[in-house]
Image (tube, rainbow, N blue to C red):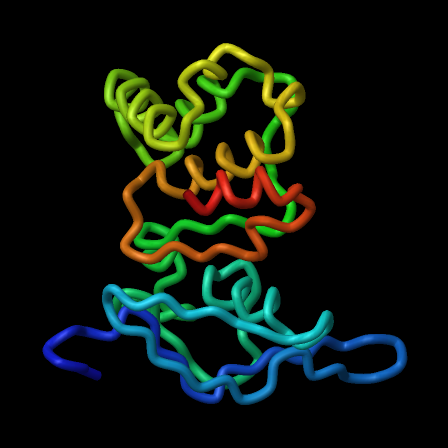
Length: 185
């Protein structure tokens, strides 16, 4: 699909996810159709329980769809989940950092997961720390960070491998207005 010469980076057709519960099937996501082109920003709005997070978890291969199809940067969710993960970054609602290690260790470890050499991982950690105002925090344990600092670290980790697509699931939830403004900056 093309729009003004730009390729679709996300394309979904009738994407669905049904969960089986004791009370019976629950349609968490039902028939999502969307196309997002390179350079576009798409936001999902809706009440709690509307399926926003489930849709993001489908598009990032954390859940398998029970219906429909989707691609992210040309990689199919079902037939090429590793390809989807290589080209996308994901910031979940609640972060997943190890509170016992330093910001630097967290960033370097994340980079190493994406097969960067030790030297490249250290360099990338430094770049991200500068870009997201974490430089003075590199040697601080992640468990000692404020909410805003932790969210910036979550975003840095999602950007480690320079993804083509970045998924943000309520990145400012729980932040005070000042921290929220800093994060968007």
